[in-house]
Length: 402
Figure 1 (tube, rainbow, N blue to C red):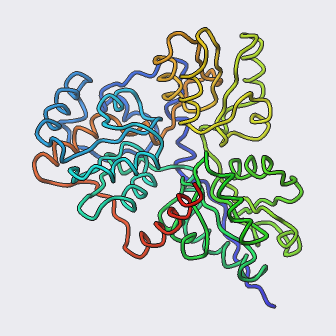
Figure 2: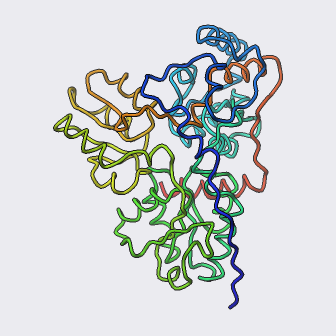
Figure 3: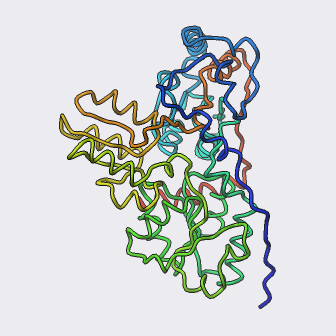
């Protein structure tokens, strides 16, 4: 067998380079967009009339547009959105839950997804034929998703098929990826997972093949594999900028779990040192982190769970309990506000929101709502029929697993 190996020049997504743009030691307060535009990130251009509006003016404008639209528009707010967006959301939650809820609103002709691009794509895939999906700021991407470009993953899949043979590996994609990659899973016997269903879906995959390629988040994949009893020496990392991901054919054949070299820019900020400091400051503190954190942090945590699990666990915790949380700061602040009988704080002392989520400024929500009220649709997210078909197949397999 002759292998033709592709080697690409290393690159870092701009969304990864921009992650620290909003980091601060001060509280996060929404400012008029003209001031936030000074941050060193890419912004979608807005009409000048929106960039100078303050919070009160934006709130009034959004409220008026929503009254005009009524039930024709539904606003979704991801857990990581700033409070000045969440206040307008009809539903809040994680990306997949929101997409399902939106599809269940038959009167809603337009789904406004206050999240990031891959989430809006998923909503489009799951939505009803008469619905359309709008993303308020088209520059709201996701660094993790951007670390797995379609062409790179397709090259990886071709290489694995050539080295291992057909039927020897199953693709498992984390929800945080493009519709194209969800479709790749659908076409090739694979499945999608959320952070809460990763272990179930990976077990499903092993019932069908001896190996799994997990993308785009290496840390969720590694944490899931270790939880299932897969040894570290049975895992290999796939670096898309190296031939065969930096592995030999023999290493790939011996591997049970192949991990794509991607990560979450927010969750990799959390460290063991932060956990240690929290325990020193609050003896008896409960440490709960997201499974996108590095394994060293997961190992020293008391609880590990998805965003929904973090919300539920702390809400159900005893009064007076103390929680150090390793996830996005906007969610942690909201949990603290909604649980005043407990002490809830973020493990990271630096206030560092998800820089792409944070680009959904209320000015963008006001703009897309005003346009809809005037009969114009802006920033519509579309997914090709063929891509949507196979993405739905992979998502349905996840739902069938339960």
